[in-house]
Structures are given as structure tokens and as C-alpha cells.
Length: 425
Ligand code: HEM
Ligand code: HEM
Image (cartoon, rainbow, N blue to C red; front, side, top):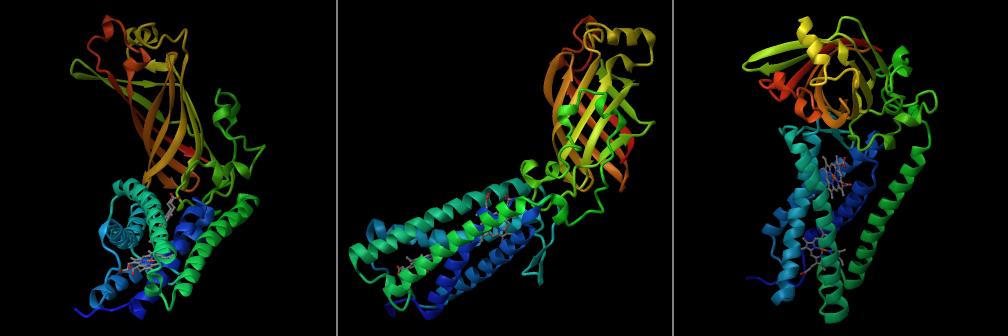
């Protein structure tokens, strides 16, 4: 085997190019705002990330077609150095792939155009991959930082303690390698602080000025019923703080893809003609009923469901199975006990888009003195200011103490609630 003293020029060039790109990329990844205001940083991050993937493939190809310098050290430290190098190669490939996967499986479809020129297609991955790839992308980043620390400590050990000239194998001389080390650290820290500061400054102006899509979010018109219900704390106070309510930092952890809302989410008025039904199995046959009186305070931008605030209030005395005797039983203590608990309320805590026009909302259902988390699923059809809402929820009636006596013996535990109504904003 032909022995060489140092890495080839190509390997050295690729090593430092990738090292610098990675330092900037990790810093950018952590520092970029995780909402729509970071759109440009996201595109840059994705562009640099895919470039790193391509450069890493070239580098691996180069490695297998060129002679490597023989390792200077064996034993445990030699093995560790080798393991860090292998780890780095895995990292350089896995990091962009998980990033690509998380973007591809995101429920919100944001196109990626590398450096504003080359469109990047999505990988054929379903939404079920989104969480996993997201977690992997983040944990791998920490793994990469650990590898970096080990790698640099190892290199400096060779230089200052062992004094075996190892640094010079990855550059024209040891001084040049130390200079590159400084540059790598400066780039990483520079991007980190630069983007972080930039973000601090961007948070100040009102959201409207930078909103990319204004036409999809009509200006809010408060529903006349807004004050009538006990829902004030769930509804953003739009008169007081019009811009801040929709500011990205209020929205928990929104997807980067969500177009920035142009103001508070629009409020929707439920039109007459809707239906709120329930159905429960009773000894093998379905018992179907409905609620005659209910209302909703809905503030939601279909394009940015994270900022939604929804409250549905149901008058329990309006429950009917279409039979007077059964209806009076429903109002009684064994069922709704409407004299003590006239209303049931559901308030959203987190609304998200599952895909296309399908949404899922977690919330709290307060029924018969018990408050528990309750999920609702719904779809929106129609466009602009007029939508049709259809949805359902499965409620565990026993958890709320509804149906306790002998008359409920044959009733199934889970009650299916369905609703459909038109709403305009
Ligand atoms: C994120 C940044 C970095 C990555 C991903 C990286 C990756 C690697 C990899 C994979 C190798 C093994 C090359 C091979 O045998 O195929 C290597 C070698 C080397 N790296 Fe880095 N490196 C980075 C930063 C640095 C820094 C900052 C220094 C300076 C202290 C450095 C100094 C070296 C040296 C001297 C070698 C040669 C080791 C030897 O001859 O055994 N690297 N690097
Ligand atoms: C070597 C390449 C890459 C590195 C080192 C890297 C690093 C990072 C880091 C450190 C974060 C922040 C993690 C967090 O705060 O939780 C991040 C986030 C992200 N990266 Fe990458 N990334 C790379 C490639 C890519 C690629 C190729 C894409 C897409 C094509 C991508 C898409 C994303 C996205 C969308 C996020 C934000 C996730 C969120 O919303 O929290 N990354 N990346």
C-alpha cells in the first residue's frame, strides 16, 4: 500500500468547506425564528443543508478513490478518533436527510427553492414521519456538536500535548489549521448571534407590515354573541391589542410554513340551519338525539389554525330524543341534571391542521361540573368568508357522570357527537 503523509488537496478543501458550512448551518438552524417571520432564513437553511449533503457525497466518493494518510495513533484514542470521523460522515448525510424529510412530511406544504433557483421536490413521506424526523433532526444536531467538541479536543491534544504534527495533515501547516478552527468557531457564533439579534429586531414591528398574505384573512368582525357567553378569556381581546395577538411568539410553536396572520384571526358567525347531534348505542340499537340550542364563538384563520380560539356553548335542556318522556329523563339528575348544570361548554386549547381541509382541535369540555380534555375533529369546505363546518367528537359519558341510574344500564359508554353548520366571517 502506498503511504501518504497528509490528506490530498481535494480532501482538505472539502473538509474545510464542509466544516465551515456546517458551523454556519447548525448556528442558523438554532437561531432562525421558528415561525413564518423566518421564511427567508428557512430557505437559506434548506439550501445550505442540501449543499452540504451533495458536498458530503462528493467527499465520501473522494475518500474511497484516494489514498488516505495512515492513522498516527492506535489504541483507544485512535479508535475514538476513527469513531468520531465515521460519526461525522453519518451526521453529514443524516442531518440533511432528516431536514428534508421533516419539510416533506409537514402537513403544510411549503415549496423549497434552493438559493431561490432550484426547486427541491418533497420526499414521498406521509405526515406520520413529521414528528420523528423533526425529533431526529434536533437530536442529531446536538450529537453533531458533541462530535465537534471531541474532534477539536482530539486535534488540539495532538498539537499541544503529543506534538506529532497531526494538524498539518489537514492543511498547509498547523498554523493554517488553527486559523481554520478560529474561522469555524467565529462563523458558527457569528451566525448564531447575528440571526438572534436580527430576530429581536423583527419582533417589534406590527405583524401586518410584513405579512405575506393579507387577502386570505379578512378583517375581524366580532360576533354579537361574543359578550353573552362566559368565553371572554378564551377569545383574544382584539380591540385592545390588534397586532400583537397574532404575533408569532403568541402562537406556541407554529409551523414555519404557516403564512403569517395579517391580524387577529377572523371571527365567524354561525348561520341558522346547523345541527348538533348525538348518538349512543343502547343494547345494540342506536339512540339518536340532538341539541336544539347551542352557539359558538369562533375566531380562526383557516390558514393559521394555531391562533384559533373557539368556544361552543350548549343548552343541555334543549337535548331531545324526539320523545317527551325520554327528554325529561335526559334533563334529570341521572343524565344532564340541567337544573344544576344548565350548560356544557367546550373551549379550544390547541387547533391544528391535519391535512388539507381537515383540522383537529384539543380543548376542555365542561359538562355536569366536570372539566376534561376533549378532542374534536372537523373539516372546512367552501372558500373565503363562507365555510361549511362538519365535525365530530367521541365523548366518554361516564367520565362526566352522565347516565348513572338503571335507565342507563344498557347505554354504551361512548357517545358520538356530530355537528354541521355554515359560518361566515
Ligand atoms: C464540523 C466541523 C468538522 C467536521 C465535520 C470534520 C470532519 C472530519 C472528518 C470526517 C475527518 C476524517 C477524514 C477522513 O479520514 O476521511 C476529519 C479529519 C481531521 N479534522 Fe476535521 N472536521 C471538522 C472540523 C475540524 C476542525 C475545527 C479542526 C481543527 C482543529 C479539524 C481538524 C482535523 C484534522 C487535523 C483531521 C485529520 C486527522 C487525522 O489525520 O487523523 N477538523 N475531520
Ligand atoms: C447538515 C445539514 C443541516 C444541519 C446541520 C441542520 C441543523 C439544524 C438545526 C440545528 C436546527 C434547529 C433545531 C431546533 O431548534 O430544534 C434545524 C432546524 C430545521 N432544519 Fe435543519 N439542518 C440541516 C439541514 C436541513 C435541510 C436539508 C433541511 C430541509 C431541506 C432542513 C430543515 C430544517 C427545518 C425545517 C428546521 C426547523 C424545524 C422546526 O420548525 O423546529 N435542515 N436544522
